[in-house]
Length: 457
Image (tube, rainbow, N blue to C red):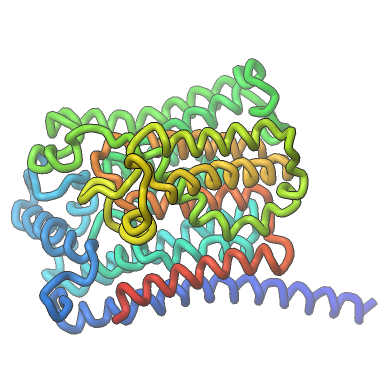
């Protein structure tokens, strides 16, 4: 009996050790890519450039040309900063926070370290969200590609609004999609979403997930098709719908206030750049990103792949719909509009297009739509089909919001695609088998290599 108890204790200790080792490995991957560049920035006390005078990355350029200027402006204007017009196309929340710290310390190194902590917080938040359904180890593995993304790493080194806003998005989805909806979580998610809108107004879209999550826990859910219902939504009450609507209302009110303040969706200074009309290639490029990153998750959905057959109408609808999204609009490379990032600059730009339709985007979108279908089926098989549909609804809201931005730059797409794919996979449970683990690790390694080539010079 004693030997059995000792063996159980030892096995439990090994599992706990593996869980912490996975988390340490995740943060180490982020730190190894981030710290060498961050230390150079802090040590020099100024932004370093390449030999020809160019910035190391577009994120560094944004810091020096926009965000740092706004932080310094707000710091000088405190306690009454001018929020109506300033040198950024985003909300003022991040700049205000940094301005207060700058006013209190007057130390740029502290600002950069705080910004790095926000990046680390984004990685940890995604691990926290994924772990609720996939466990601590699989959660760390699924978060690895985002931790190694050049956009997350560069956003941790240089001061921009990106990581803070994505942190808010991950927390909101972690509360209402990756966990069972409650009144408290609905209101908290609404407050966090409002904070995200205050940082980047484009991230108003999670309010749809908050409100719909409340609806799914209400008696109204019985009127929806069975695919939206599960035993995890019991017991149902009208109060859940009310609190879901309250949570969804908070970010909407924040956006209304910002629009009133600016007289539009962006501060007047940048309306001609990011608010000059919608971008019709948004859906196709989002699906193409799902395909170009989703290959790593194919081993995780291999059971679902084996069930595919020629009569699977959903498969053909998704593939055709994805391809069609890239055929009905121009998806070729266009300077400063469909531009920036390795997807636009390498395969799309370098390979020939047909009448302005990029084969990379068309085929990638078709494959990406199929990947999303297979991941949702994996979640459905694990009893989390409604949660998967809720996440897909949220991602559709993101696409609609992002389409309002004239610019379809990769930095606006890659983080959300990696977050969405990881969450949808996590809803299906733990990664099982060496090939499933290997696929995610391989994507993380590819991401790290791209980041190292572009940043750690």
